[in-house]
Amino acid sequence: MPVSSALYDPAPHDPAWRGRVNGAMVFLVLLLPALYLSEANPATFLGADSLKASYLFVKTFWPPKLDADFLLLVLHSAWKTVAIATVGVSLALVLAIPLAALGVRVLSVSALGTRMSPLSQALRWLVRVTAIVLRSVPEIVWALIFVRTVGLGDTAGVMAIALSYAGMLAKVFIDIVEANDHSAAQALLANGSSRFAALMLGTLPTCALELTSYAVYRWECAIRASVVMGFVGAGGLGQQMELSMRMLAGGEVIVMLVAFVGLTAIADVVSAEVRRVLA
Amino acid sequence: MMQNTRWHGGWLLLVWLVLLAASLYTLTGDWGGFVSLDSMHKMGQFIAGFYPPAHTAPFLQKLALATCETLAISWLGSLLAALWGLGLALPAAGLWGKSTRRGARLLLNILRSVPELVWAGLLVIAAGLGPLPGMLALAIHTTGVLGRLYADSIENTPAAAFAQLHALGTPAVSAWCYTTLPQIWPQLASYFLYRWENNIRAAAVLGVVGAGGLGQMLFLHLSLFQFNEAASVLLAMIGLVLLVDQASYLLRKQLA
Image (cartoon, rainbow over all chains, first blue to last red; front, side, top):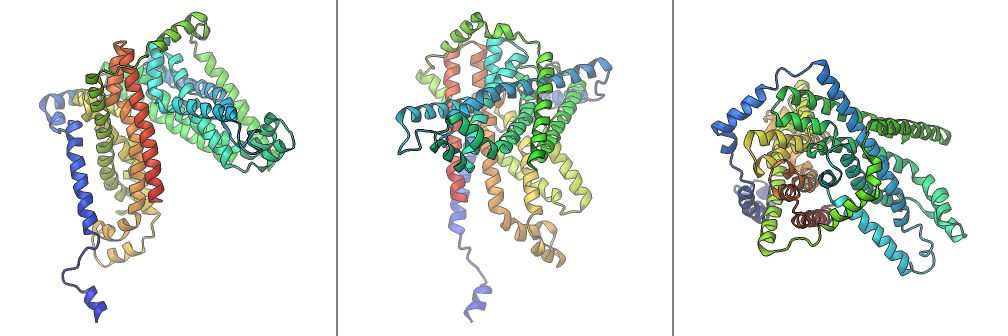
């Protein structure tokens, strides 16, 4: 019977073998230069010198530094991290809300008729490009630049978060509004209401919750980011951690790592809870 | 319901304002100085210093090499993370009982909650400057992320076929490879792509702590106040991010 002979074929063919072989070849061809470029040589880690250096560093992790002064410093920098994130996101919102309101296509009065006028089309395009540029420069790069202009410290962190998050928030706000049902706003516009009234009465009520919960989520991300930005000198917990790492003070590093993990966990829980209540 | 929501919103706004006031009170930055005419002027000069971006042939060559390095770091890091993550996802999905599941999940959480940049800082101490610590830092952090996602998708897959093979005496790992793995393969691949995309951005900045690629170049030129070169590096970074965004969008559309 043909069925059983197909089932019990002593040397079955893999119907996809050609694809698999090709895939494996491409993979290998890409792997070798990548290994070369990333200088992937395990010996770097296993050499006597680096083993000794890591051993000495890791040994300093214990005992963790737990005296009151230091713990107070850690607490203070953790709070500063939260403060940087909060002020940064608030500023970002101040920038992002007008950007988003301008960039939303469905609220365009001129789009009601036949086609959008070239002027408002150009304005919208400009808003979108601004948002893209703001957010495609990573926040840590903004931090580096602001550390150069306003000096080491919290201000650089706040500015970096404000700019990169303004781009991100504006883009997502536009997406959320455009994905929502906008018949109410357009009906308002068609009957002669102003853009602002249509925004407040037609658009916001349908998507306010979504917008708020995204902003809260971004606040949580900003806390994580502001810790990382501290590494380039933009204040908060990260800056302290960088100092301790540079001095190879493992006992301090471990305490700050724990504080950092705790802080992000708390932010995670708070933001999840707020979003659950809002939903 | 509506009343309830409004009430919550009011509370949220109040809490936010209190938090903001407390934050502003703590951050005694020189806010007045920041918006003063003098600092605006300095800022303007600073920004003008970025023009024109450096574009001599040897510099562009170096830039291209650094871009490739960033791509290589991110790809290898994600690949390694996919392997390690899958290795940890099996115990984290409860293949060997409850206690190993808890242990593996804890490990994944720790790996994930320390950011790449911190891992890179620690590894640079161990291995010295260069792309390798950056690659490993990405791999360690991403292992935590992918391991968790992989474990969840394994747990969400119907386990009947696996249970049957396992009950007939096939060892857990090979039974898993023949039953669950083929079912979740597309999902694993799309998680991998998503993380790779993230890691390209991350790899671009890891260099800040000396871990190779575009980030290291940017940090170097900014430190030496060579703003024209820094501008080119920034442009390369933005270009790379936009390119990756577009590529992964197209790829995911094809996969879906």
